[in-house]
Image 1: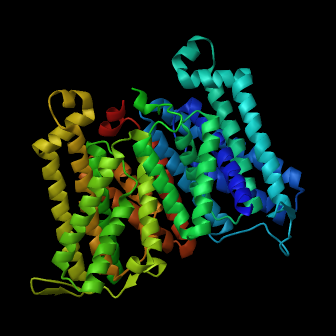
Image 2: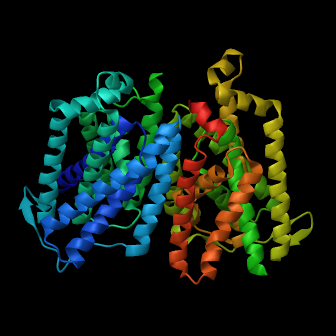
Image 3: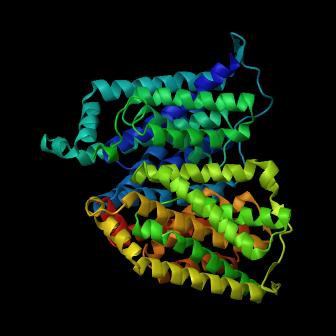
Length: 290
Length: 290
């Protein structure tokens, strides 16, 4: 029972990360790896506000989310978008975002140090017991709010006008512009929303786990792997992919050793890229469509 | 004086590492973030063969080059089923799997404790003991690699690589085996990467996984991008600047743990600035995708 709960929690966090990454990717069509630094940064900012500066939790959350969303927007507006418009290759934008990631990650390391940090204080509380599984109060917060976030995203993308515009730009940005959709403003909006999701993911991670400056990179990659397994642009596939990854990781940790979690996950990614580069649902990757 | 030798030797190591990417990245358009992994394969095979079996230097060098070359050929065959952004994601996956194997396969690599007591280099009756002798050997090998890459890029094979980076489909239509040519370029790159790996093991006399992390791969890639993807002298210059920068920071009195982060921040920034400045400049890559 406990392992099922762990799988659920982990897959929800991966889904949130994957969704935030995906909403940016759908319209801008490049892999923004600076997103990984946003996840780490959000954890640290929240930790500082809540634990050291003693802000009330709600205010700490709001400040973190606004801050990360603004940073995400700023990175896109001032660095990534100008380069994206200038080069023909999304690869170059990806490398630039990698540069941004390195800069932010090392700034985090200078400010907060390279060591592992945690939000736990005092004795560990037993938590509540449901069907022989222990669940802490923090985990309940994660469960409820991540599910709310995912449902909000599904509603946003499927029912609202903005969601339709995002999908239109994803399928054909030139045609979408002809029909009067302002691609630029949608791009900015999706980057702000993506930043919010990164901030939420960072807060969820710090609520339940220890953090270090580089952890955002692994979390982001698990999100990306879930997205690739699920087929890009498909939120249900992403959730299935997240559950798949979380299951593999928990089973590895339970039956073998948690040092093999990382290589095994990446091995699954490599397998998927090679055997089924179109994801489980069979949606083609953007580059291979040609 | 010894410190100066040390710096020059490391500049040469990184020059070789960067130049090993010139054929696959600059000419064939295969971007790889797994070079630190192959650097590690070189270093580890040298350490294992020399410490456990006591094989002589030349034999170790040859075997390391072969192992790395064959492995990278396999990786290339796997990797080329994907394209562009997915290739980067896949090579990051391979890098992390390789790193994880070095870190966790304790019976072979001694895990995070690393392998110590690597023997001195001796071949053809010469034993290399001093830093100066080692510098001479490194200079000879780097000149060899420099000339080799130049010869290959000017050879008929190099011309085919240039042609396929301009127009891959046209290349196929005139009967060139594009797949094989690309895989071979990747494999040549991998074998060259093993040479500084072997030298590193013999020079430091100790290998541990922390040297071969993903950050190292990003660093190597930045050297190539900053130096210009087809520019052999450019990578010499870029490696010199990027290795000597942290030394300058140390002279300014910065504590060494912050200097390490500052080094990364600086090369992240340089990477981003280079993208702004020369985003149209790297002929091969941007055109290959366009």
